[in-house]
Image (cartoon, rainbow, N blue to C red; front, side, top):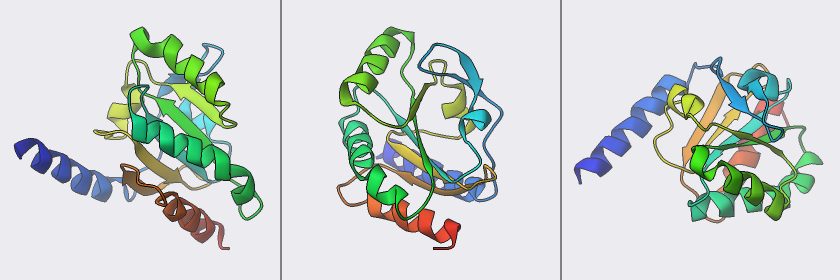
Length: 162
């Protein structure tokens, strides 16, 4: 029960804190193994940023769902998806293999030291954010249930003015 209360408090206060937050200045690793600033991964248009781990089944389900709806959504609004693996060095190869195996058509980066995870107050996965074209965090959601991806599309359309 104590763990639940702490997680709920973190989500509540984290959401309040995030309302005016922009993407932090943190480096992550791209698929080629290069260190890149997360701010350079976001390309000046709205983006969904989803934190995931190789052992998190809801994470994989969410990312597979986003991969399957992405093409249709791009007909309605221009955006990017960035999947951020929070797996450490022991699981890095497995995470990269999963990205290729699932055929995800979006940008995948790796936060093996969990610097980005800490900077964005992520406590549970999947944790999904939407940032606007300026890198301002405008939405945050924890967990995944089938159909909840519609909230992401609705928010993307809202910030795009559609």
